[in-house]
Length: 71
Image (cartoon, rainbow, N blue to C red; front, side):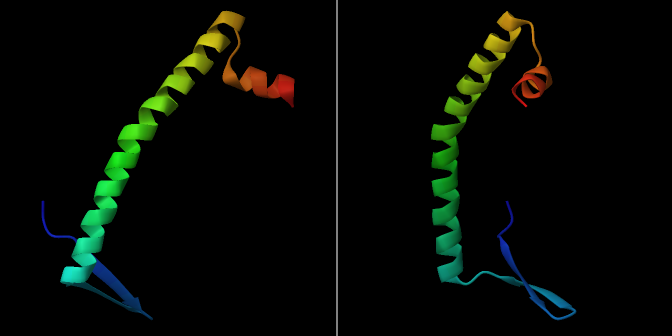
């Protein structure tokens, strides 16, 4: 993977530059947090979606039909 860049927009001018050491450290910290968060949250959301779909299947309704019924 190439090094991340910073895009600077000033008026009509757009330039790209390398990150400073401080920006790169924060970028890596944020990236690690996001990966950790996604690893924890996404399986829960997927399980909730599967449970929801299971209920809809049992009722024989689509998600749009439920939305219409509930207004």
